Image 1: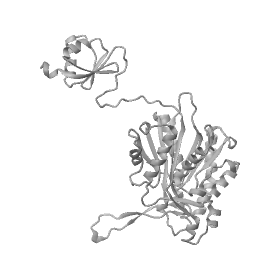
Image 2: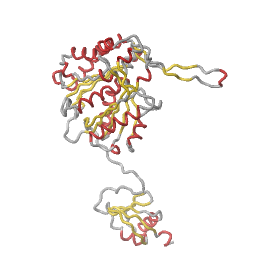
Image 3: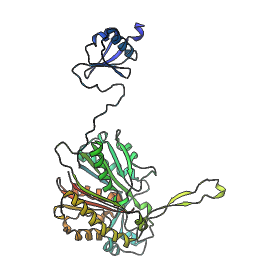
Image 4: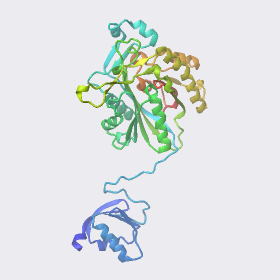
Length: 421
């Protein structure tokens, strides 16, 4: 019996682990002055009966592992038996953006190239939209690959290791997998302990993702959240329809949002969000169902994505009306005015929309961040791509107040007033 229970026990006194081989009876006597011994999955405290104490230690030692906490220790040590040590979450904290990144496909489609395919011209497209080029995914490129690249750049700028990310919010309408792309990004980045999920809100997705990240930090005690905006709408347009195909490009942008340190103010100063499902008739890309041939023996039809359908005039009116309103609401929550804005960063849908919003809000053109000419409308990716470029060029600096708003399919529209850095 003594040989059966005598084992090489991993003993942790305080937080220093040592290997010992000894009789468990003598161990129980030696540990009687300790605060507790962990064995066989349970914490054993010394009792009044020395025999009871010895029997408990002997039983625990039969599994070959004892963890001892001395009287100077008030907390159990981190288990070396594969158990994950839980950390107490700190809630009620603000958040701030500490890193940005972006990635776009290599292939560039110019207005002149489109003019060779259909009845249009560079002048016709650029005067109506401000767009001159757009990047388009090739057959061997994926949204997951772009998102991973953009996210890695954001982590590098922030100086944060992938293993330290708690949550990934993948804002997209076009994942590589119909079940979602967030977990694929989590896998390829190596964020082993992060939970990941997709957020679908089209061109408003990134702003909604940013607000969601701040709520997980404030209410859930998360430390670091990666917010990724990514879309590849070029795969869902009718390339013979000049009313839509000229607008869209592909790309990805990411930001690393971190919990504010004690004493630091919240970087999210105010926000406002809205949806109107009745407006979906003006902008949608629905699935149709192809009936199954009777002779095939198939039970159900097959879902097929239809190209993007958009009523441009209605979407324009919607944007120039709702975006100033949603920005004003967020500014009011932040107790700021348009004069306090350092940069206006809108979803890069159309230069005319951005100009109209800036005029309504009395914001000078030189404060408007725009890269729509180079990328077109990249949906959920447009705001983080533009932010990354502005940060890396030195335009947006730590402490700057950035007023941002997304708007698009759903219909959805949302704003966030952010103090960068």
